[in-house]
Image (spheres, helix red, strand yellow):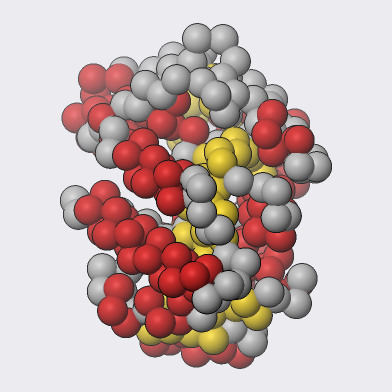
Amino acid sequence: MRIFLTGATGYIGSAVLDVLLRGSHEVAAIVRDPEKAERLKLRGVTPVVADLAGPSRYVAAAEASDCIIHTAFEPTKRGAEVDRAAVEALLGAAIKHSAKGHSTSLIYTSGVWVLGNTAGAADEDAMLYPPPLVAWRPDVEKLVLDAGRGRTLRTAVIRPGIVYGGARGIVGDLLKQAANSLVRVVGDGRNRWPCVYDRDLADLYLRVATRTEASGIFHATDEADERVADIVEAIARNAKTPADIRNVPLEEARAKMGPVADALAMNQIVRSRRAHAIGWAPTLHSVAGNVARLFEEFRTAREAA
Ligand SMILES: NC(=O)c1ccc[n+]([C@@H]2O[C@H](COP(=O)([O-])OP(=O)(O)OC[C@H]3O[C@@H](n4cnc5c(N)ncnc54)[C@H](OP(=O)(O)O)[C@@H]3O)[C@@H](O)[C@H]2O)c1
């Protein structure tokens, strides 16, 4: 399958790229850094040197693809605006490709944070109560899902939990802090985080990309419902030199980190019913229970970087 991927150098996108290449798919990927583009080229990827904010440079490549997977996100003040414009451009490209009679799909990356604090377990049908950080995102999800209704274009929204594995992301930051002897937690840590292993998440993208019946919303969580305190204690205990833990009051965390602090303090229990229905079966089911392995992956990834 010819696939157009955004965010191939990112945490989620690089895991997705690995499974796509293992599956011998033909991948074109938008990259903004020419050096990173060269590295992707060596792996058999066709790089499209472009910025997400300049769709005219990449829509032609997207239009030539059977599947578009959007995982890029610009973490700046204009991030939401750039994301929406990129999604509009990518949907336009996908619609043109499908109008030529090709089976075409588009996968958008959202996140479980759009659910807000959950009352009990939330599956893909749950109401959304997004915190301010991601309040813009449900509209983009809707744009994607509406484009897949009543047309030949198939669209899907994947909502990953907090990703673990390797050296990046929120759990990667906790591992790094533990290696530096002090781990900070927003609030008392009694809240639960929905999490997902990066390779399991990538497997879900592959499944959704290749299954013609897969459309709509898919949660990607390991369903361990772990309390943040349990995750952090396991990480702190398993560092080479056991690390201290500091609970940072929400107000203080908000002053330092901004609205991400509120997202980290949310209590969420999230089920991935629709992902299981298409045969997705995550291999890892806990951060705390796999901490030794995660430290190993963390060190290997940092040495390779
Ligand atoms: N990580 C998680 O735990 C998690 C959980 C749920 C949802 N999500 C969502 O998943 C998406 C990706 O997250 P991530 O953790 O993979 O992020 P990430 O590691 O920061 O990767 C972001 C990717 O986007 C690319 N990018 C950023 N701005 C760009 C621009 N202007 N033009 C072209 N490419 C650009 C980056 O390229 P460079 O290499 O050039 O920087 C990188 O490849 C986000 O929407 C995030 O909200 C993440």
